[in-house]
Length: 390
Image 1 (cartoon, rainbow, N blue to C red):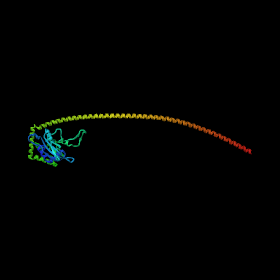
Image 2: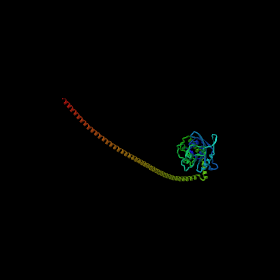
Image 3: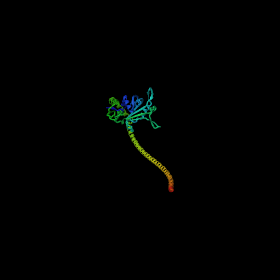
């Protein structure tokens, strides 16, 4: 399928006039569910100052369904530029948007702003085709992110989305890939870069609608003529401005040079940082080693003191045991002497008993002898009496 290049203002305007495509475009970039979109009046003119063509604007009031199920209104500002000299125009238009109000629940209020910039040139420092610049609330005291949101802050700051059409590739996987594919600046079938071949399959209803609009705009003669008129106007603008393209190319070369120099400095700084980190780690390692040695020395000192105390304790215990042994020795000697004394006493008593036994034996013999003598005397007496009796 052939389609018109949506980088042209007329083509992009026709694309975004379709409610469903506008929801698809905004919802896919913001990664939000868009309930409704309302196109607001915007400037779009070829008259008077031809340089006004430099920036094309579309403003929408989008009603977004949040993750909590609530709906909120956001002012979506889409700006499209073909060269990088339009920064001040971006800033001026943004200033105007902060002044705008809209009805919410019957009351005029300032809406939060989200900006979408579609660039027809490359930002040298950023290589991705699509980026989001989002805000974070940071507690500078506690050094942590704040999760709460404040209406005052939300209405004075904004998120931004940037699409670099010259960096879009032929990736075709996610919804974002599919949206970006229609802006891809390749596969043109004419030298004017107005019509290009779209090789992908429009596999969603939104993509079918978008490619149908672009196909009609690129093939219908009157529509194509309007694109050619716009292109011619751009050539005039470029000529009157001294050649934006040449200036842009020069800027790109200079920017690339600065980027390379910055990269070189970054690498050198990174190298120095790595070296400093290496030295810090080495110093930390030495510090740890010194602390380890100090702790080891302290441990050895404590162990030595412990051993000294243990030795003192053992010495005291040994002295105590020696004294106890001396005491036991004295007691043993005392007991030995007592035993000797008792032995001598026992021997004395034994001798006394022997003596008494001997004495008792002698006395017994004497008594027996006396008894024998008495018996003999009685026998003699009895014998005399018997004789006398005869």
